Image (cartoon, rainbow, N blue to C red):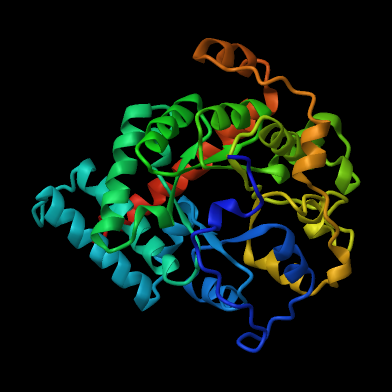
Length: 367
């Protein structure tokens, strides 16, 4: 079936929008929500709840940093999630008290904590919550598939249907192939850390439910390479990369949702209002995940600041890319020449690996 805007959330009942239940001023944010499905990029329960009450937020995304922060938070609610994760891991893997904690047990606790956090968020937003597979498995297809199945099983044990969850996988070739397997099983996936058209096209061809390209980090790479310090938003290399991905999906009838994340000020941080440059330049794309600070910025802007910039019909018509089907060999050949993709993907995996390892250190102390 042809893609229609918001078709990915047609089975989710949106609560009526209400401004009386929140002190937030809703203006540009509300206009943007009329064009693009919005996700909140946060694992903070109170913050997600506050924005969910506006009726403008459909989904929520988490990542290893948010789960690590939950593990170290100290708030009684997060402490309870950690304690339950540790107890569950001990019980499930038969780890004995007082003994060195096996890797299997720690991995189980990491996943369970992510699921505990995700379950809380599912109760706040009407749509889907993204939960990430252990980033250290980004180059292991089968191990990623097995961990994803385990995460979904944990959610279902807690009464959360798999159609409320997106499994996040890094945008490696192996991660994309894991998504292909999982999608065939009815487990929907979010391919994250996307910095390249190659990654996006491969994900669509694997029938991934959604991709998360990072326009801000693409901009960072181009600024470093060119020495240019600012761009007009419509000429921002990150914005142009996302529009190219979106156009390809719509031209060739791929149902994969384009959900950009990770934002930077196109015109430079010293320009007033530039923090939402990329967001406004992509208004109308399928979905966006936005951190609370930028949701606040959008709430303070006039609705007239939002103009539709992405359109399925017009962007598809402007697409010049062929629908070239990748094999592992052809993908690797093109990937070798993709400086931005290679550098930023490695950087992202390394950063999330550090967060995962930090979380494990926290959890070891709880056993």
